[in-house]
Length: 443
Ligand code: GUN
Ligand code: FE
Image (cartoon, rainbow, N blue to C red; front, side):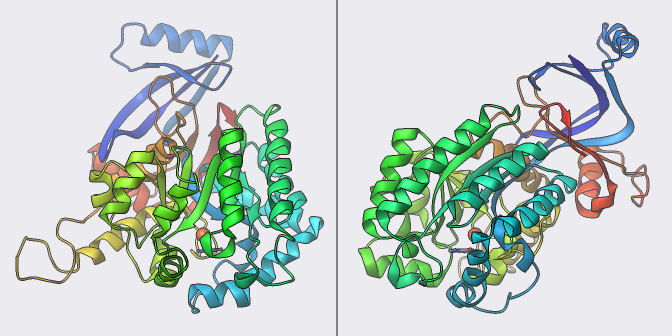
């Protein structure tokens, strides 16, 4: 057992911070928090002294400790492209920039180099769980799963499926529907095997890129495969106007309905972006228990859109945050937490009181910094049905340790909510001194 002592911040309830000053977290060999001892507990000194004597104490002193972040949506192969090519519409960007880059991952050495760098860079920024799109290539996709498991990051990885000749190119496509399904099945088995050896877990994800890039036959077979192997599922859903219109034209239905029909909307589904879903779609999501990866930076660039977070939360839809590298330029959940708040203010667009004749904006749509933090932590855990994202008893111990000593006015603003807000708005990557995943130090 390990005993972690520190100043822990977390949000067990949406938007409500809890602060555990000088708390002791007791973590078992499996990396699970089995108890939480606060300084007013009569056994506190005894537990602290014993841990110090027997060498199981990890003391973070006066540092601040936050749960590790969950990145629900990131394209690992697009890492070299982060920060460029942000001015084209999505379909042009895919054809001209992204598919040529992703095709390079046929070269396994190139894949190893990029993926090793990316996974470590994410860990350094406090991302302890990541849900990855890899590429169409079987071997390079397995390599991404292997690299995250070796570096100690909890990873959900998908071999991307794209077989529709009309929306893909000869140089970058699954050769046939049958081959795409066979490769996905091989991928599931290979990643499950890797997962047997790693404490923090690595999981295969069935990954149709999005409806336009797949044939009907393939969408149907992927839904069956996900059911047969009880896997997670991820795809882009109603991200932008082009995709939304394309799906309606091809099927006479919305993205959400098509995905549900093919068995791709389950309580293990992560649906990316979803800017163009309406209230009926929200109900379908809630009914199936499917989650949304909100990618606010990417959405601003590629969808000119803002996800109605507040409405979806009220509808009972599971929600977390994603960076969507490289549709989003930043690998940091800190940046996406901030952008969630900023974008929600734009959605409000001047309407802060309910005025019937006022047609701009959406009334009551603001997301607070603490709510946004919840999405990046416990919201991500809920999306994946995993006990991560807080320091509650029974949760997995994933943590990032922050130095707050240089933050302006940190000691003047003593309430936990203002201190956490300062940490989220002003911390830099270099302020993260340690990262722990499932009780193991990875930075
Ligand atoms: N839709 C299909 N592929 C992609 C992708 O790589 N990035 C984003 N943002 N949307 C997509
Ligand atoms: Fe994406």
